[in-house]
Length: 375
Ligand SMILES: Nc1ncnc2c1ncn2[C@@H]1O[C@H](COP(=O)(O)OP(=O)(O)OP(=O)(O)O)[C@@H](O)[C@H]1O
Ligand SMILES: [Mg+2]
Image (cartoon, rainbow, N blue to C red):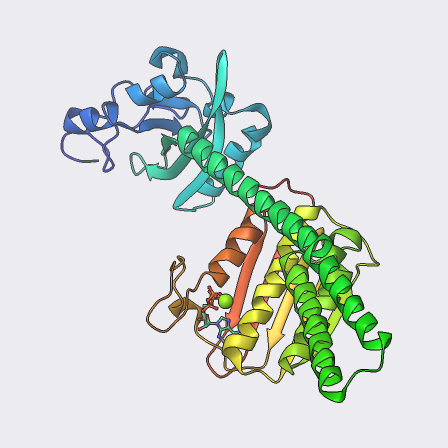
């Protein structure tokens, strides 16, 4: 106890844990700091019964201070989240110094408020009386704008995929058909009459160009949006992607799908994982100098996982900036790939891990839960 009769943490100790003796704490300048703090602050006893509350707390809970005192703090929590308070109280009782958590507090006649809480335990009088201090910040508006931003990004990602699907289909239905007609026309001319050798070889060349253009167009359309992803699902589309990539780059690639059994998943999850595999393979070809790549799709514990592992040069993920670098930097790299992968996976509630060390290859792991709704 300090000379002015206050506890070391600025609160007068209560006569008993239920708070009847907790009359005028905190005092002096501490009292002003407590009562006029812009953050909601409360003091409870060891069982979570409110002993004191400042103006911001009364405002947050839309309750006069007199009404708050003597009530269990958990009473103001949204029903289903009430046990969380008792978990925190138990943690503090067991000696955890500080607990930080987020919950929703109910307000009569209004929408609940999302609140970020910090709770810590203070030894009031050195005689075993414990107070719990609660500092609450209303994060409702922040969470709403985060949710709105995530929703907007999700819509943008969906719109982008829809657009790619449309362009891929248009390429197939228009230019691709015209090219086929061109190739057939050339063949017809070639077969129509005996032609001099120079004309024949020119026609062969034109035929070859038409075939090559058709192949490139098909590859472009597939990269934009493989029809297999919509028609056959992630496993088939990724298997094809890995095979095409390996043939194009000459890097040996092994593909496995574990626990899939040709199962389909929500389109946004399949698309996100497909795009992760696509970008990870592009990175392997661009940066790693790898000789072998293994791509594994797996389903376990209610999530779908994609793992892309290479035996290349590796890099230090910490050194690669977490934010995108739009445009081309001096070394000719835009560095949007890893950022884009993380964003995509995050939008469907998943996580992206990158394990890499210089000289030891790289493993990219995307994990998306199946049950949790996106966002
Ligand atoms: N498999 C890998 N092996 C070695 N280095 C890698 C690998 N994947 C990524 N990197 C490193 O991480 C950096 C960031 O990758 P990221 O995909 O974000 O950007 P980028 O490939 O350079 O450009 P962008 O993908 O935007 O065209 C790369 O420039 C490279 O240095
Ligand atoms: Mg990249």
